[in-house]
Amino acid sequence: MGAVAAELYSLGHRPNFFYLEHAMGLASSTGLGLSLSLPNKKVIVLDGDGSMLINLGSLSTLARYRPRNLTIVIFDNESLLSVGGFPTATSTGTDLEGIARDAEVPQTGTARSVGEFADRFQNALNTDDLTVLVTKVEAVGPPGFHMDLALLENRFQFQRHIRSLEER
Ligand SMILES: Cc1ncc(C[n+]2csc(CCOP(=O)(O)OP(=O)(O)O)c2C)c(N)n1
Ligand SMILES: [Mg+2]
Image (cartoon, rainbow, N blue to C red; front, side):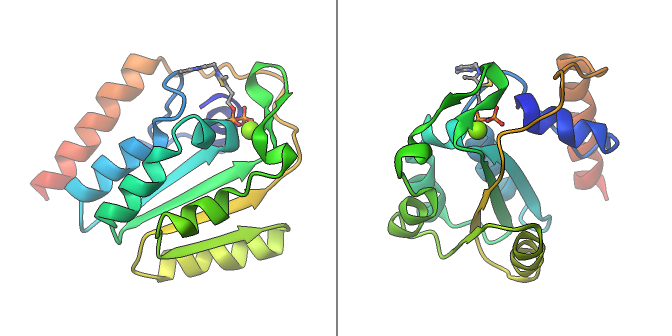
């Protein structure tokens, strides 16, 4: 959502991208549902630290059901950047990877550089197990978060895409 969604969209939209523009915290829960119902597809969630912090219980539910086709990337800028840049609890020491590990998420990691992120993300893609990858980033984003794709249009397009996978 917010900055993360706008940045992904700016790289070029694809029908298998679903942006969670307003439902803060529910990206990981949506990813859990998608990965359990699409066991032969790799599902990747791109989330923010504030969004993960607002739904920490999701980490224990993820670990409990352990979908092996799900990778969660948390872009931790220690900030609620999209609403003005208020510092989050990760700025005062909360360790999201530590929480994920103690929730029994089987594969966890923290990346602090682009190279480290690339390596760890590639590993997550190659590993057939639930992964939570915290990525420390600077709190900078695009100048605006407007996307030329209406929320409802994205919702129906994504639904059609999922249905087309079922038919294959
Ligand atoms: C339930 C809910 N609460 C609050 C908001 C307002 N809101 C939108 S983005 C955002 C901050 C998200 O922070 P983070 O996940 O860290 O992402 P960042 O903007 O830092 O990339 C907030 C509070 C919302 N959309 N939904
Ligand atoms: Mg943030």
